[in-house]
Length: 452
Image 1: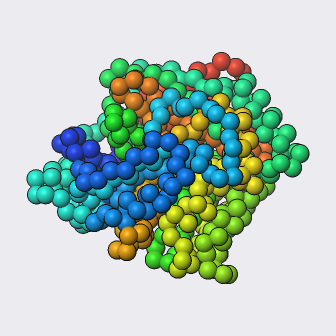
Image 2 (image 1 turned 90 degrees about the horizontal axis):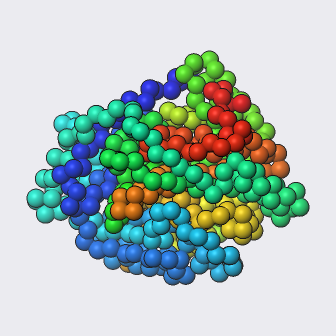
């Protein structure tokens, strides 16, 4: 098991010269053995906004991408589930930083890159007019000034599910599990607060990626809201007729001592509760994909593999299938969204209970950010979507920020351990944001370094 890399600033592109062109940065890898690579987009040719859940959302996105001349980028928020025909959910308040349930853009320029700085390898997927192209390439070949790890004075955050309320929600969920209503449910909570003076989104994203090196990270902007995502999880990728999903269930902290770090990873690998969580959701994903797959083509290529990032070990499985010729983007999303790793099983009942016990909606969290290519016939071809976790939303106009975290509850779960897991997952995001959660109960004790 490799020693975790130190949280050193990464060489991210300097986007300051592209501010008027609404740049987005999406990473396929944020450091690690393969180096940093991903996409820089700027300028907008066309845009699709869906303010609230829409029964036709997947078809409208398909039509939007299908009419584009090149790769499109965007998101689908978790609250799109409110348009699900089998769900009748109670109303819930919005998150502290609300966003449209879906937002997609056809950019004026799309630059794929491997590495940054003067030696970066670049490939224009969509070529803009020369002036913008020049600014984009200069941004990529000029790295941001190095930022320190200190975010300055900390902003204070609070949660509608603090330790005491979280235990009450956990007990309700656990009761449903013991009665047989569900056998796994992902219980989430929002932490929110006010932005500190002088807060800088670029510096916050640099700190976040440096601490995590998460492969599906993204820095996005929408109408004054900064979206800073350090997701380690892929939701769905399509490559030709092949579909890939990589659900995560099981998390443990890294340790600077390599012997103790390896022991933590091995304990995670053999933990019966964590393995049960992962196997349950892997089975759910198999069922979801079977709705769009050719017969007998669904396979589990990796079950309960341990993947190590700078701040955490994760248990990840990989499920693949061959997509039927008569099933497209809308069919795939209808079968699989929202992802099983962020809902539970059975999925419909889990989503109903979630809306009853969580005090606010999830907004973008538990949704998906990514890209999609037109297929040349008015539809969507290849695409790649992450799972929106380990993400901060910051509204510079209102001065508010929002961070969601969660974890899976099963019959073997213990409330105190699940509470600590949410705090572990929140730590890197809050540190990068320059914030901390109010700790007002003895139950809020910090998770020890060996994960106990």
